[in-house]
Image 1 (cartoon, rainbow, N blue to C red):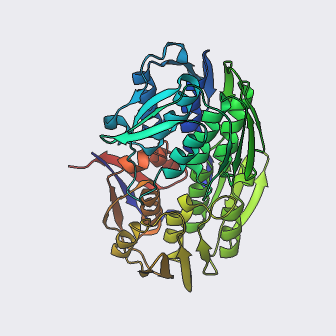
Image 2 (cartoon, rainbow, N blue to C red):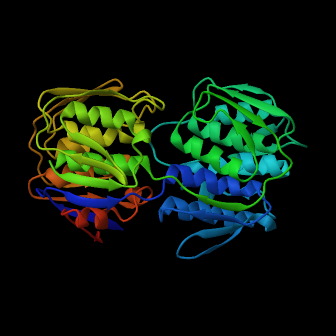
Image 3 (cartoon, helix red, strand yellow):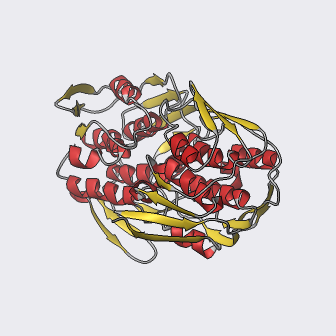
Length: 418
């Protein structure tokens, strides 16, 4: 098992290229199941979660081949409709094959999901929505068993703008008979990217980026070529890295329109943010003000940036408050940051951070993907050496992060944890 070792104190400067968005790539890979022709995807990140999704597709009978520029997916030979537990438990996003399998073949058997231990994240909204489209569902032996002669369009109201449920229902409705309306749909850029991909392949979906989606079912989707959007969470993480080290970084490929809440909070802290032709430039000389953050569905502050901003708040003068409204168990990084000298207490779903702490290097344990990023950021400014253990969590969502940080001037390297 690998760990990252960081000698803190370096000011980060230079340019870094953002990889393709993991949370856009995963549903788009799942959506390739809806086609009966070759699909070419560009800008796929090389991540553990992407590898897991390819394993799921392979079990279903999807073949793929990779070139330097793109990955070709061949969904013509699908001959299995079961996503097994040993793969789905590794990555919650595997549940996204449920909608497209039902949409194209009218049957699916998918294990109940696993993933990061950051909350229960129930899938009832997925299942209720699929039932509205005419699916018969039963849960038996830890599996979702679903079947439908042909899905039929209907009106679906989501009690919460769940990203996962919105993605699954969009894919299921794409080949359904008639019109489907999804009210209170999620508006995240990754949802918009899925819709753009499907429309490129011949779907008829209107309302992308709003909370009301209108999907007119089509008989089939054609193949084609599509480029995945840049990863806004990776971009946001490097923007925090520039701020926390009082550095200056051009985050190449980042789309500032996807990062409105992150930009606002960094500017409140005193960072300078400039939109460039090829990305976003972030510069910081002094962190001046504490912050208050409440995670919200897009376009609110993203829950996937909460941990990174908590690391930043530990050295921010004054008292910052971060409230988590999306997941009920997403403060597991607090105890590890406190081990490094932070002063954080948790009250209910809020973390109160007394800033201007001196952080000290320590061995810390990554508990989930974004917590891992927070510990790396803390290690960049800690006195002495920090070891971040269990970096397999980090590898699920960041492509070669230690190499990218090293090119910016960080003293960071990967080694085997003995």
